[in-house]
Length: 199
Image (cartoon, rainbow, N blue to C red; front, side, top):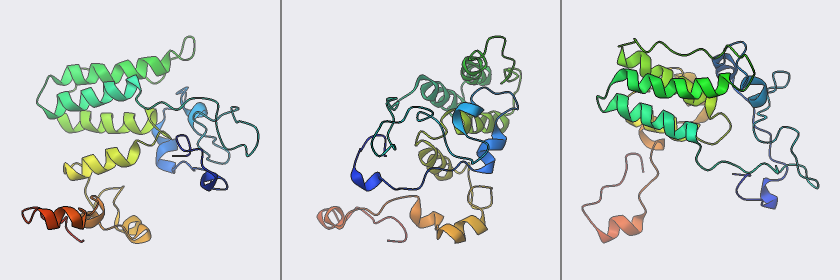
């Protein structure tokens, strides 16, 4: 949120560090990798690479993107897939994002297009999840994606994100923390409104 709220409280905050999962998700010659992550210190570079303002040096002159076309394409791919639409149409949308990334470098070869003949819905959904991880890294989308997928049953406490070790470390309770509590003022006004679990 430092992009949107140039508040003194943001100064001195620790820099954002890429996870190993994010770094490993890129293909070797994906041109997005060196623009997203500094592989020496694992800092997120996106939108602030060589672009800092003077003064405290924590801002960026590069405007943050509120909604990117790649985000729209990947959300549409997910909607097509989850609503029973044509799987090749969903894959074609993912490939649009990958083609744009590949064309960042003249003669670029990676990331390669995904196979539009794939028919397994779970495989294609994983492709969408992985592409959103890479393409939208450092843009504040990941929590909303993970939350949506967890509520939809696509991410469970047993997988790599909500591992028991991570959950314990974060003091994360999936049943409670995926939703905020409903304000007491609302539950008091309407007795039919039930509080979210754990609150």
